[in-house]
Image 1: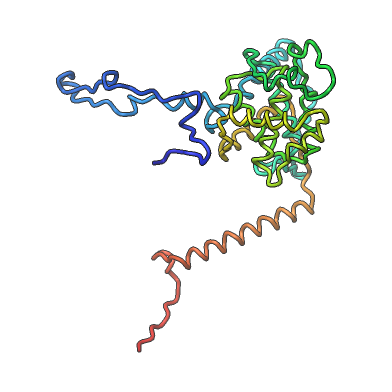
Image 2: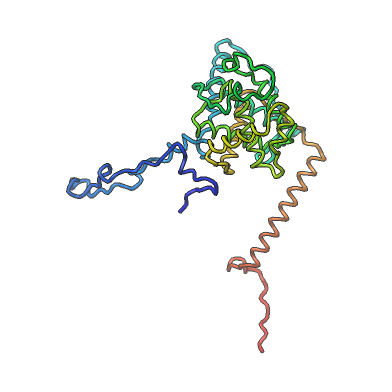
Length: 341
């Protein structure tokens, strides 16, 4: 009871972690004969004999909401170096570009966890992938994601395609082209990053210059089908990427699902964690989300939305009181006269 089990996959049964089975000999129970009279009888608690759950959380950040995301950890190295360099060179942060509210003007951010800003979210996801590639541990990959063996275009792949790291702008343009052509939402971009990190964790591979395009394409393809109500078909991506075939898309999608062990569930807590970590990444790299001044029209719209929500909750509270009335709620209610027949 109380365990969080997904309808698609159980977080406690990660493909990389298996709970350790302990024998009774490894966890002996102390009796009164082994304990002195001063300490008294000691019985080992069952939690001391089990493997702590923190290990599972650290291994699969895309499954557990309390585990830190991989891209945020990889970006901290560059952030610390930038701050150290600015401090050593006595460089000023420059002009403040962030807008702050005042008594006369109020700036609001329309990007929320339920409706993120599309352009800013894509920029943050591209930056997260850039840090993944730049600060990768090795070059572990699979043939299905190798761009040399499965090219996305008819143009010749450069000889140094597996050595030169792509720039952040190149990654952003690639993702933006797919999202604008397929008309995908900002929520789909966040789920794309979740699937990407889940693939790296489950398959034990690295995203590197030789495979980043096909890994990102596979994650976008899967996220659009899972998240959007009107999913984009594989043949539609072939219209965007002119030289790729439907058979190649189907094969890549099948391998992607198998490597994820068909765990396509994204809990709300994991989604929210990735959203706020992307905002932290934006703050660390001076990527501000758009702030707009609060106009009269916008204020009236927000007031109307809050009034509708308030009326909705009032109706819910009234219906709940009609279904069950407690003694506290009966104060002040006029008693009706009984009719005796």
